[in-house]
Length: 215
Image (tube, rainbow, N blue to C red; front, side, top):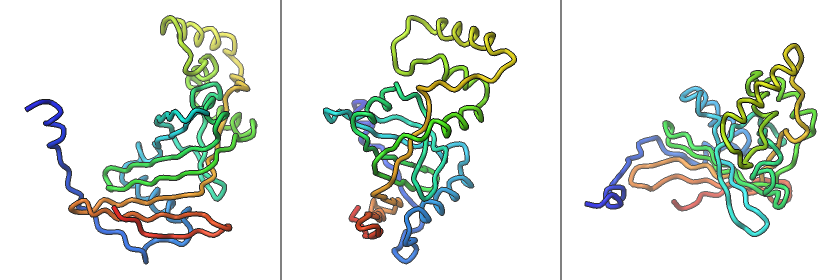
């Protein structure tokens, strides 16, 4: 048997309880809050990990894992270097999708919407809440750009650490936050025999419409 055949033979059974329409909140943000709290209880280390999918002006997609740092009625926020690939793509095409996958709960949530850059003060506040080592790394790195050797980065970190030995590390103007303002949510619950439960919320005329989707 080839390796590809071995992969195709892999199976996983889903055994979680079902998801019914009457269990769904009218507001998807409240539904997300319920599921996030369950994920934080079950697997706190991974609960806020999310796939961020973006696309450039030509439609080429990119996806990577980032960490959710804040969510409220305004949207879902994360922080990064604006010069990164995701930052460049969001400047060209300010639309994205987030995916949360909570394996232990057999759940996933997709959230799609427009992305806005947060005020610099928001990024600066969060920057200074991070461990000093993380601040130094963010300050010296031109994210996604090539570099000759890791030692070059380590030397930059050491130099900046010495420079601000008894001071606060300044937040770079090229570093800060984004907020995805949701227009679509999809809540997925794994079910036996792949007859999964899927519910989609769509925003129209400032109202959320809820519908069940086929698996």
